[in-house]
Length: 96
Image (cartoon, rainbow, N blue to C red; front, side, top):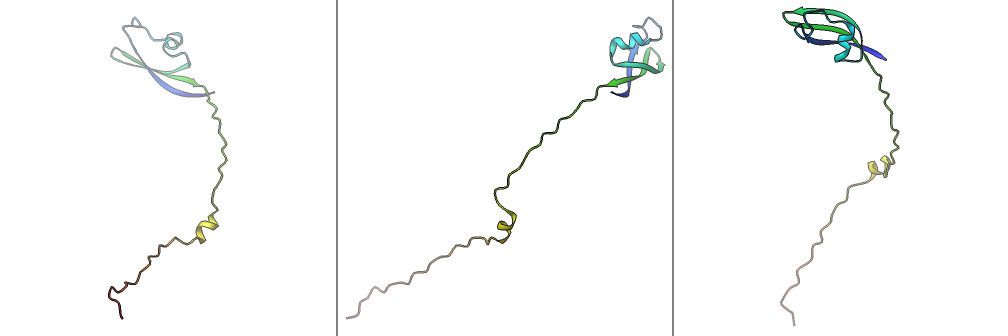
């Protein structure tokens, strides 16, 4: 398991003007291991605590890709061209 630092903000009035202990901080976040630092600013107490983060294993899915055309065939293939036929006009007058 890995650890990270997290800041938890509490109110001095809710704590009845006492410093928070580890058990009080664990009520808000159950993954807290230890208290690193406590800062008090007015009526707000910010507690920096070490929190354990569970390691999530990622499973890689292996996929196989099947190519339908080869690269050699597509590189040598010429683009199709269209031909138009020209028809000769028939004369409408007959020779006798």
